[in-house]
Length: 472
Image (cartoon, rainbow, N blue to C red):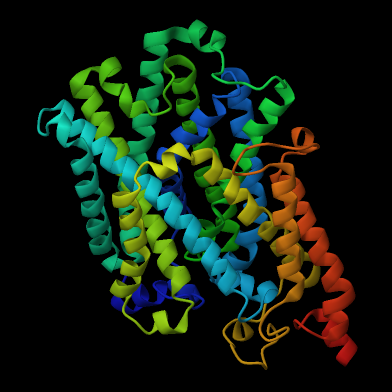
């Protein structure tokens, strides 16, 4: 990649065909490196509170693939066709000013994921240093803070090379991650046996088996819906839409489900979803240290991609776009560093709440985007209008904001909170039959369709095909 090509992939402008240089293999490796990290263990561990191995595996695979399918429908068609990233793809339905909502949602969610990753990276590395005698156990908290800062600085230096750094780092880490995952599965089966796995009971199941299973599926769906910011930023570098769906589905969806099973079995058999806490005991100091190192760097690789995605989203802001790429990466990294230093345990102790909050955020957005692109836009966007911030833009709506999407988003938020409170995890019917994410997505889509069809299009807002015909 030459300097000019690198410069273009560091902006939110649409990529031209010659700038879209990732082959399907590159996209697959980046996707695997992105998806397989600590969050898989935490997802599986959370599901292990409610489901046994058989039901937990089924729920994680079903939920993850459903979530990835919905994200693929919402994001891939527009971003891959036009070479744009996720935030830019919201301008046709949020408005040429309202897209800032998508930027905020993306920024906050990726900060949350990156904080989890870098804290876990520091924890894994610290545990390895303690085991090998390089650091005293009493220095653990200090070591975690310092390693988190070191990770932030290292990522900043790596991302000087933009998308090129993401591709090459992912190519190395993806295979290592897969090998470590296989090794961990082997150690679990070797030490506990299939019979123990089959008979293990969930930690704190509710009295309703259906509720337990639905919650397992819900975790898979909302976790994969959190790929909304990630998918657009990586598939836009692929030259053809037809070459993006399968690598994305198999690279982002399936590996999450498979690696989450490690966390599930860890909770069921040991009572701890964090395999780094028992790797040394099961595999010995040598093998355990190697596995700890690989897991630490797997988190590191995912964090690099996450920060890159945050930066691309931030480049939609004109004042930030005029700044250097290095300053943009700094803006994406500073909040992560502060979280990792000041409140490192927050995201771990509240992981279930964090997952539910992702459903609140992204489920209605996904429904709105699918309806707008396929039903109203007929799979066609006007590139020039995506970057027209004036009142003459087809995507200006009302003072730059689309009332239909705002109202639909709020209705989706209310629906999710009604079905499943993300703070208390108290649910209401029909959550146990439908999940919270799927009805929330449906409500967002239906409300958006009704308001757009009967209010927005008749007003001539939004540059919709039907509105244009009426004007002619």
